[in-house]
Amino acid sequence: MKKFSDLTEQEVLALAITNEEEDSRIYRGFAEGLRDAFPSSAKVFDEMAEEEVTHRTWLYDLYRKKFGDYLPLIRRQDVKGFMQAKKALWLMRPLGLDEVRKFAEEMEFEAERFYRKAAETARDASVRELLIKLAEAEAGHESLAHKLSETILTPGAREKEDETARRMFLLQYVQPGLVGLMDGSVSTLAPLFAAAFATHSTWETFLVGMAASVGAGISMGFAEALSDDGSLTGRGTPWLRGTVSGVMTTIGGLGHTLPYLIPDFWIATIVAIIVVVIELAVISWIRYRYMDTPFLQAAFQIVVGGALVFIAGILIGHA
Image (cartoon, rainbow, N blue to C red; front, side, top):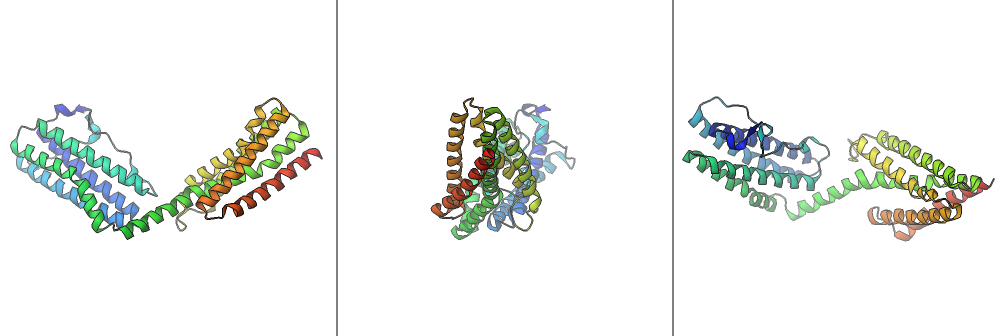
């Protein structure tokens, strides 16, 4: 790797050209990734990509005038101590709107810093003038994005996109997570308390609870991942939904399993029952908060189901 301070003016311009081309393609990637769900924001990124193409043209025209047609291949990752290679967020699907906007702001800040640093070391007046001009253009991209947002991303369009983002969050995270939490919290009650009242051994009960929780997590994870590929439903990638559902299922079961690490059987059981009540209340609140289910109705449904499974476990344990 080469230090930025050791770059020649030819290499600085070549690096700037590469950066502008790369940034333009990143913005295009953002636009394509957002176009279906967030068309107004995609149009903003299309405009930003065109701006980067214009900057590249300015740079390349000056480069050819100064150094001819040969353009050395020099990239961010070839330069030490300055701009770092970016995480390939633009290749990921689905794209998060807020994450993309934040990423773009960081890109503009880095580009401005690059041009100002390069202008400080430039000896040629025309090169320095263009670098300063580009630094000011990159600094103005925030106002450009704001201006584009006012004309393209109108309040109505933004409200529609925010609602789409909320719906995608529900489909990709809340829904599979809630299903997993409900399954882990309720389905593991019967084997856990059946083992508890059959053995009166906290350690054996803990092992049964761990096995039930982990097994349920693996089962729910695969079931959710295989349910659909998300291409038509907008529920996101299978591995994402499966991971969320599997992890939350395991957490739901571990909540009332961990108290059985307490040596005293009755204390452990009382703590586990308290944890179960808290889990059911949390599930009811999530359904009320994100699924528009009246809280009392959600609580009644969850409590009745949980109570029946709990009673079944105790009766089986005493059999």
